[in-house]
Length: 588
Ligand code: AMP
Image (cartoon, rainbow, N blue to C red; front, side, top):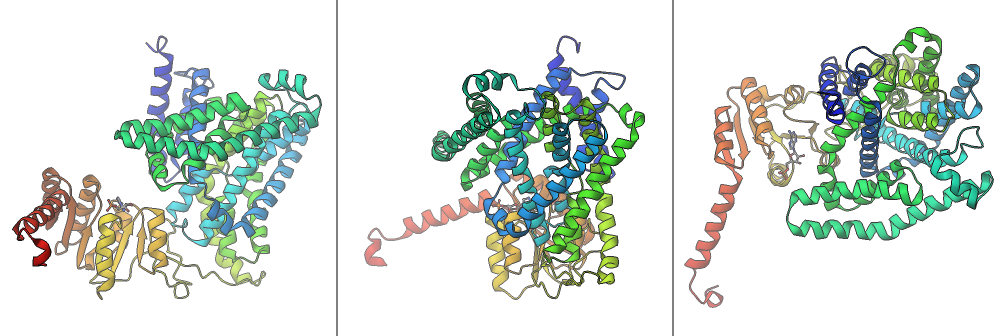
């Protein structure tokens, strides 16, 4: 019975319900995150029916935070940030100031303390990475300039939030909140007064950062290297996970810095080398699972009745997130003389709040700064703004021609580079009718190459050398960026998706080369391609006899089994050596 196994019941109910509602959300084109939060509300104490164990849920959520922040660190790229720093830094800081100001005004209006208002405002000022990346990916914007600016902007926001998480416990007493238990004794003993506590925090964080940069940066890759040599993939993944959790937990215990910061650094250090980056990517499924529990845990805290009881503050919160922040971002981007389209995309993508806001709200309540009502407002604001985020993009799409035609701003029209390279030619055709869909290729009688890794990359070299028109379908961002830089027409995304295949115009293609390793996905590609064009010649890649049968049965004309080709090449080599006369040196 659930009573005897609260941990299992909480995990099962949380993940199970989150899956069902997340899938439903996905069906209606909402981020699954909305479903996870709703699942939390349903298993929470404020709704009837099953109630999961709240303290367990919040501990599981804490694990989710560690892994989320580990992922943020893993994707943190100083290079990307620097390439857009001119706009991202002033933009993010300006927007944070604006949103925090508005938040403080609302908080004061509700009769909270200034400290509570600051936490509230800061929580409203940071957008959700998960939601933003997803929206950008759906609209294939990640590799465009707009995408880079939005992501860089978000990284700056994240950094400010990380700083806030670190400083808040130290500043809390001055702002009228409580001190955290572990800080209390030490602060009294070592450093009386506000500046002392602040200085102490800086010293601790500094010591932690220095230790990570000096020791961690060498130790962690070395450790991974050693484990890699043991030859067990399982152990390797475990090592990555143990390091992520260990660094987060250890840094929290030793240096009093937040779990989030420790995990962020562990991720950042691991992302430095290609090898460990790959390894760390392997742990992402686990991150996904636990971050779902994080969102469920957050949802459990939410009292839906607060929506009905007191709608005005919620409306005001939503207006700050969706209108106040957006208007600010829009004007800032225009002030930096970027096109209207860029300004609109960035405003829309940042018009929501998410995981960081929850983390900040949790800490604010724990420190006695933020009233419970504040946390409920933040949760409601997040839920609503995430649900309404696609609407923000739709409004931005509609508003764009209107604003451009007003010519109030005297800005140049956008001429973004799009997949396929030629930036200038793409100026107006750049916007597909439905921004959710990839753009349809104009090629006919072409070759479609799926996957551009070890196999597809070599095939692509030959195609480039020939005069055969071709396009590539690839879902790894790094590879896509490289292909686009070379001017090769690329469709970004998972080739198994129907929209992606449709955009490749298979009906009029000459040949399809499926060069991806996963036979299950390859099968889906082959099946849909065959349905779209009975004449198409389909060549696919496999790694076992069973896969060869599978792909052939779905309609592939030729299936090449990698291992067989390797064996043949080895036999050839062996024959060549053995057939040669003993004194090869003189024969050659
Ligand atoms: P390799 O195994 O080195 O030939 O790499 C396979 C390549 O195919 C990688 O670059 C992957 O990013 C890419 N890939 C794998 N699955 C898919 C898919 N379903 N859709 C598009 N690209 C894929």
